[in-house]
Length: 530
Image (tube, rainbow, N blue to C red):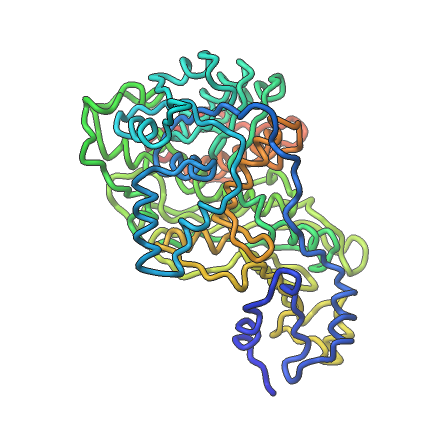
């Protein structure tokens, strides 16, 4: 029997988690059980399971949500609070498509020991939706007009920040200084100065800060750490990761609520530190398209890809970044690029190698994005001995020039065209994905992971870890250290694109190397390139 790569990939489906590891050997025949076991023993990769956390005991954690837009609603759902409209829509979707499991997944989700007690949103309609959907006879949700009032009220012991980027740091700093726990969406900060101020506040506070990079809970990424640690790939000299989108929603042209007007939106509060302009619905609902409120591709989508690889490689802040791109696919008044490429250099990166000592050192990390094409490009880690494709599924392909696997390649018990290892914990779980943007996040492992063959919301696991950290003092996988590295990397990328030049990091002083006559934060917040 002759096997093609497509046959092999198809053959991986339907495996339970205990058997979700598979070796394909040679392409011409199915190898003996003994040969498979021998290679798996040599690779010695441990497929990671979800870490066990102690129960979130004691009194329920009193949480307030600040910002109830798209992401705010998703975060509340992961806490166990779904709006009435969402429940109705998912019930209808399940009736129309038996594979549409969103409602079933939500209903089977573990109940967290949390009370959602407060909301702060500058749009009256959204704030009222929280109150109407989540208030009960036992607990009425209280609305606060400002985040300062919520933080100082004594009603909340933890807040979730899901606002436009320019509000992230001010809210988080104020909460930490008042010992209120913080879950903050990415990017952690909007400016370089804020990044240092937030780090200082987090280090001094008794409260816990978690940055919302939920892919750190994805089991394939945890398994990838083991792959890298055991030097299965050899020296990794290049990483490539990508954003591929081709619809208006993916390009941040979100729907504008018909009830939005100057009476239902506190426009001045929304603007905050941003330039004072007249009321503008487009800016309010589609804020990600402008540097004044958002961080563009560099702070929005690159941060996901950077952090999910940083959690595998622990590579830290790059020594230098060079970025290019432009506004090429959505010429609609935005001033952030919709096509971006960033080359990040890590000349000192090394995890060991299989060749002569000192022969290999350094890595280039390439991020490329377009909001005008949805052709799926995998994330790949390219090593001397093997290449790893990484998303919700993990696949390893041996390299024809490998030193480590040379004998097996010569004996044709390995072939570069056939994977030697795959980890697919969700192989038997049907998915019904509603949009191209959802598919994009799902393929990257940013929406859900799988435990014992069941699909689990990655954001739920991330929030559960944060809540356990609050109640039990357990470790957080994405705290201020990881957030600092993410934010600085995003800001360096934005600066490089705007200035059209390489931006360098000084590891010793932990600062971006200055450029004469350039105010970095003024550049980041400016509406034009320099």
